[in-house]
Image 1 (cartoon, rainbow, N blue to C red):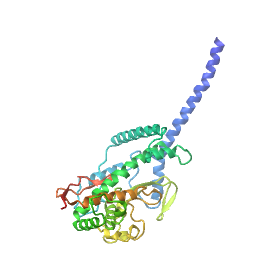
Image 2 (image 1 turned 30 degrees about the horizontal axis):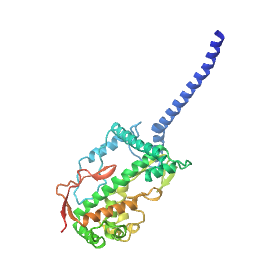
Image 3 (image 1 turned 90 degrees about the horizontal axis):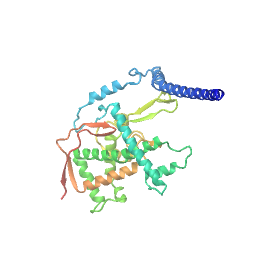
Image 4 (image 1 turned 180 degrees about the horizontal axis):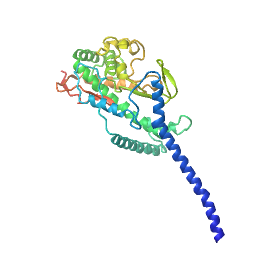
Length: 354
């Protein structure tokens, strides 16, 4: 019995050592990745830019430059603009605490994961042929293009913000601009009554003839686009306008600022002038691709045509039934909270057409 106990103990020791070594490797790997992300990488990137004469606030461990960013947002809190002013660039917003944001992200993710699991279960019986169903069906094939569950969740978030939120705010700002520019409202109404006569819903053919409305929508997207900036991660060392950008750098494309560049859009860059788009979106500025409301290239918005169609149909239905103006109670305070929206809402006075 003593010999058997000794043999059993001898087998258990190597197993315990192997488990301990594996735990040390896992913890060490996690610590190294954490230190590299929070300490080494930020200082390396900052040093690379500093050599090129590009400086900024000193990096602080874990919190980075959050203090400066929050101070700028606080400085813009409560600021209002004249309704004739479209200069939204200097405005910043108050943010939620990190803890609250994490709680909301967890709740959103949980809701979406429940929808995805339900759809995966339905797929065994045929499933729905909507965007989510088609994406999950394509993903079952595997291969190098297979999406991770995090990527599928991100796509679901995009469905909501791109398919509902952004279009809703596009219509809001279009109503604001037309409500403060009655001459343009009258021109659009004349076009709608000419091309979309009758009480039936506008169809694709009649909507395609609304040239002035297309110009107004593009100008609205330029001045009050849903996204004021876009983030892009640099995946390889590159050079942009003579500046060397190291791999791993998070860059921001300041869309709202670029849409107001005088050198690109002309001396009236800060004014509402839909006629700049009379020859098409690619000839509205000094170079094609200046309008970034739907992004460009491989990452351009897949639903931009549908969004334009949806916006034109809604505006056409409103214009042929009502005249409207912005209420005197309106406070012009654009708020960039995920998407650009009126901080105090948009009260509008509607009058039924005869």
